[in-house]
Image 1 (tube, rainbow, N blue to C red):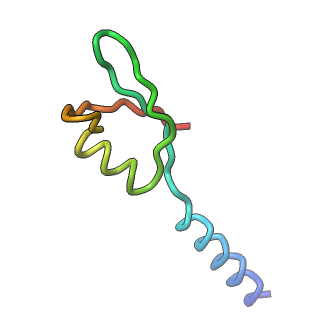
Image 2: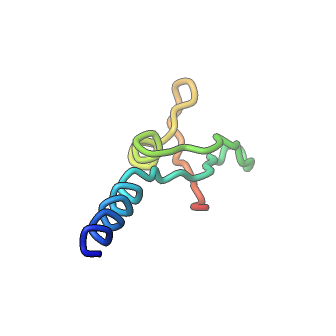
Length: 66
């Protein structure tokens, strides 16, 4: 019984650590929202930290968790 509990705990921990955080994101320009779509994992972290580049302009993005 103890072994089964440990296996379940290990599988659960592995599953939770492999989840990628994803969010739908957009940026605002000229009073309009421009949808970027869903960003996940490192792409989401980078865009939140550094902004989202469109051509030579970098915009602050807004994301909503789902």
